[in-house]
Length: 117
Image 1 (cartoon, rainbow, N blue to C red):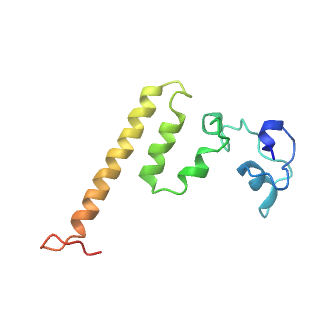
Image 2 (cartoon, rainbow, N blue to C red):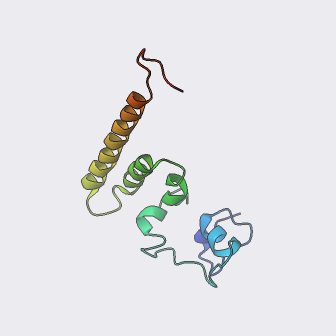
């Protein structure tokens, strides 16, 4: 079944696998009409234009914050005005996650070097 985004339908299609239809049609307190695909608040184009049809938020919500933020900036790089800035922001979040993991590992070591887990 094609996604509703491919056919530009006005209402969510029952059984459509996309997040757009799920949110607009299958959740409590849904709106009468699905959100605008080009809506810069709910569905910005630089996060919804991936060839797979997957929206970035559907992926990054399954990761820790720093990892998800890095993915977000990598996802949109080249789709907004400053591609280098997006890559630098992604690197910043990756570096921050490396430091967080190193700190966590140091805090969870016994004096003999064994992990507490």
